[in-house]
Length: 204
Image (cartoon, rainbow, N blue to C red; front, side, top):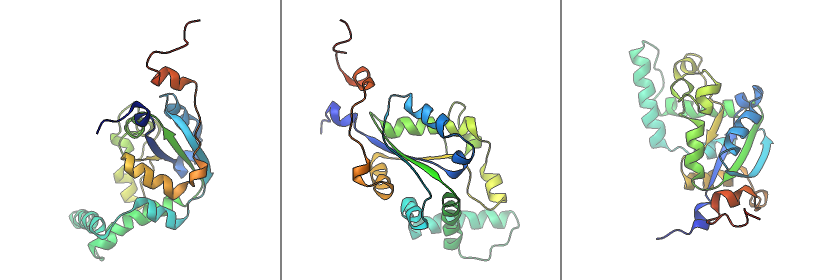
């Protein structure tokens, strides 16, 4: 089905600046990198996440826990570490660590809107692991954490930021953290530069 231009530039993405980003004073730098793309911020607030919000946000099922836990179990055995729990519990430990991290202090919650918002923000944020994220990305430039260090310290990787993976996932996540009335509908002047076919009104 053909999409209208108006629909295309209304795609939304959800972003969290995690506790480490807030603690390191990187809120302004992260927002600057996202805003300068031309995407429009339509919601912004600070909060301390609740445990149940985080579990709903990560949205993992038993099959995921089993799969990830089996890999953890395998790695522990290879490293000569104890493996005293079933795979599913090691899988749940991954999310438990994330929830513990996310509820440790304030975060910044944001919604951005614009053409290909999800893909644009994913590109700027970079891969999940800071060590292997590209130079120029938020995670690649601004932090030095790695999976190895996080595993050794028995904690979640500190990678500054979360962003939605797909447009439908963004809509689900937005619903967890924001009420509809908190999403603002307004026009930015620079949207004309990005989306006005003829750049009407530039010349006097």
